[in-house]
Image 1 (cartoon, rainbow, N blue to C red):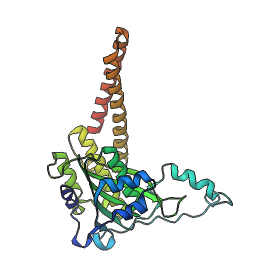
Image 2: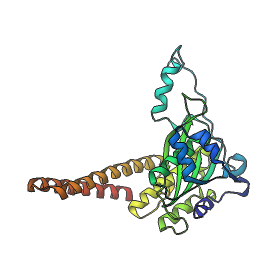
Image 3: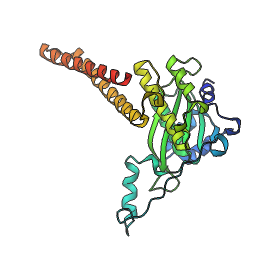
Image 4: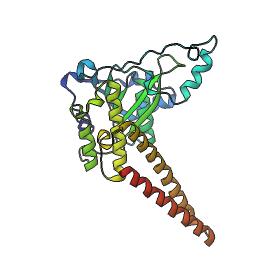
Amino acid sequence: MTAQVLIDAFRLPAQAQVDQRIPKKLLVEQGAPTAADKRLINDTIDELWWQATLKPGTVGVPAFHVAPMKATSETAPTDGAGSAVAGPSDVGAASADATDVIEIALVSAQLRPPTREAQARRLMQLIHRAIPYPVLLVAQAPEGTVLSLAHKRASLGEAGKWVLADSADTHAFDPAQPTSAETQFMASLALEQMPHSAVTDLRALYQAVADRITALAVAQVTGHFKAPEAAAATPAASVAAQRQALAERSRLIDQLVSARNTAAKARQMSQRVELNLQIQRLQRQLQELQDRLAT
């Protein structure tokens, strides 16, 4: 299984290994909110394994605990306010700092062909939500292997449920036959290679892996992989800017495809000229974004 190459890239100590199969029944019970999700799990997942557990006793990285908030007149709850606040809070983007990180689970999922990309993405969401710890999820799909992460917090509206606050997924690739950038990406995942800033606590370690996923996405554009700590003196701000630039690039590509399709069907010369000018402008903006990502 090529996914094992990516799992081995973390170079975890022997005491972190678990190698325990997770019954699909458990995932159906804990992480499938709809009948369609239950069918998707049963029809698409071949095997689900808990590969390893990263916690202070197995990898030597301290747990992360949220600093207690002092109640103030603005933060203290008022009578009758609980139910009104709980619902909307689950819908909006929540801070990933809102929950302790006492361990990280390394989980692998083998998906059966033919699994479409949208189905694979949904399955990864379900797995993240079902496991009450941050998950390093290595999903082996028909089109390739994906490493998926998702910050989450306990639901404010449903006891025992989790809300995904932010996620990061690699593109599907073959870890057994990686490109140069993918090789460097996997090398950067090794626990022993992580800088001190990434092993101050488990949340920092989890975020460091997420930042490397962003760096790999940048390398897909620039052709060069840079580990976040090597890219800037303030990696958090740099990574946020990279993610924003990647989102903008995706939007521009969609607009460019739409403009080209419209231009191909246009019959009036004036419309073609206008669309060609729009295409040229979008191409310039894409080049500017690519140059920005390369710096």
